[in-house]
Image (cartoon, rainbow, N blue to C red; front, top):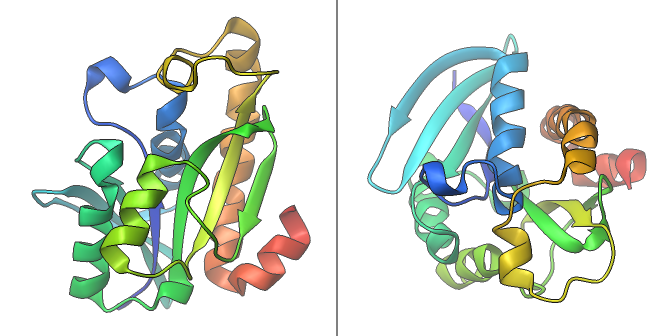
Length: 188
């Protein structure tokens, strides 16, 4: 069964970053992997990949870059080249401290918006025409963005997080089955 879509969750590798806000993209992929039928898993130098089946003839690959956030593009470019996935079937899942906590927003394309993971992907692909799922983290004004995104979730955020992650995983399945336009109409 051919892989039709790639869903890339952004985060940083290692135990130090596991439960930080910046790794919410990894958490969405973990949820998605638990909701679907796993076909296989592999590791390359730059990524951990999990192939899952959504329907009898529809499979996607879930990708967690093994590089730090600012080099995420290396793993994405490697994947796109290897599987020949059109950019219209690529979805990058990332944190966004400019959106309220728990809010999710899909975009068809665009700039990096200050996100180093997106910046790396855009540089490596030399293209901005891939979809993104941004997960809101903000609870107010963020004074130090680095400390904020690399920080742990508060007690209140931990309480709200499972619902946000599960809803995001369901939205990713909808994206793979229905495309970005329909997904934006339903979830934005």
